[in-house]
Amino acid sequence: MRADFNSRVAEQGPAGGWSAERVHQAMRSRESFRFYSALRTCSQDLLYQTVREPIERSSAALINEATRLARRGTRSGAGGSLTLDPRLPVPRSVSAIDIHLMPGSYHTEYGADDLTMGAVYEQRLAISTFGVFGPNLDDIGQSIARFMRLLHPGWRPQRILDLGCTVGHNTGAWKDVFPAAEVHGIDVSAPCLRYAHARARLQRRAVHYRQMNAENLDYADGSFDLVFSSMFLHELPRRSLARVFREAHRVLRPGGLMLHMELPPATQLSPYDSFQLDWDGHYNNEPFYRTFRACDPRQLIIEAGFAAKRYVQHVVPSWSALGATAWRRVARAEEPSVDSPQTGRLARGVRWFCFGAWRD
Image 1 (tube, rainbow, N blue to C red):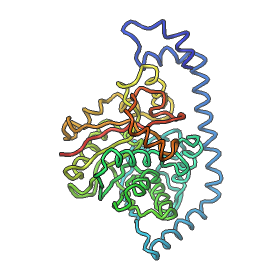
Image 2 (tube, rainbow, N blue to C red):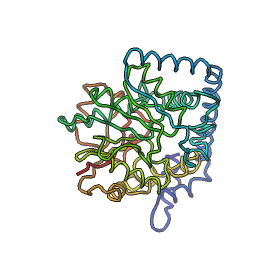
Image 3 (cartoon, one colour):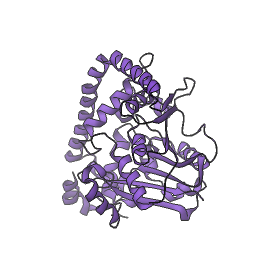
Image 4 (tube, one colour):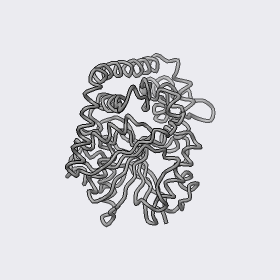
C-alpha cells in the first residue's frame, strides 16, 4: 500500500500539500487500500471467532480457578486485592460500541463472577500482536518502567496507579521493576478486573485492582508518585480526556509523574504514516482515535494544571525484543525521532511513544 502511494499517488499531491485525511481520500478507492482493509477486518473477525469458542466452553472452569486463586492468595498472604463496584455506570464510550470490533466490548458480563471478556482480550492480544508484546504481553510496561528507572536512577515511586488497566499486563510490570511500591490498577470492566486479579495471583504479583472511572478517582489528593496508562487515552472522548488529566494531576504528590504510553501524535508523523495509523479511527470502532491523535500532548498537560516546562516525552525501545544488555545500550543512546516506522507500530524493533509531566 505504501509503495502504491509513493509510486502512483504521492506526486499528484493536492494544493496545500498532503495531510492524513487527504491521503485517506486519495487511497480509499485504490485496490491496495481495499485489500489491506479487507484483510484487517476479516482477520480480526476470524480471530474473535477462534478465541471465543474455547473460552465460552471453559467459562465455569475459569470462574472456579479465579475463585481458587483468590482464596489461596488470601491464605498465603500473597497480597493484592479486588474491589468491584456494581453500581458504577459503564461509560457510553465503552458500552455503546464494540471497541476493536470485539463482540461484547470490554464490559459485558454473561453471569455471576464472569471473566469472559478479560480472557477474550488477553487471547486476542496474544495472537494479534505476533509476539511483539513479549511472552507475558507486558513489554510496554516493562520497557517504560525500566527506561524511567534508567533515566532517573534515584527515583523510586512508592505508590503507582495504572488507569484503564484492562487485565493488568502493564500494571504488573511496574510491580516487577519497583517491587517495594504499592501498585493499583483501575478499570470500568468487572470481567477484565476479575481476570486481572486472578492473573496477578497466579503470577504472585501483589496488585490492588478496583472498578473505577478514571474521570472520577476515589483517591485522596496527592496520594500517588506515578499515574500511568497504556493505550487508554485514545479510547476517551475529548471532554473525558480533560477530566482524566485533571484527576491525574490532583492525585499526584509534588514531584510525582504522570506518564502515558500512546499512539504517536499526528503532528509528529508524516502524513502517510498518520493516515495508516488512523485506519482504526475510520474502520475499527475507534471513534475517538483521530480526535486524540490530533491533540497537542503538551497542551493537554498544560490544561490539566501541569507546568509546560515539566512536559516530557520519550521513544522507548522494546525490552523483550532486545534483551537486557542490548536494551541498555540502545536506551542510553540518543532517542530516535517519533516519525519512524518502528514507533508505535507492531513491527520488528518496535519502540513505544510516551508523554506526560512531572508535578511541581
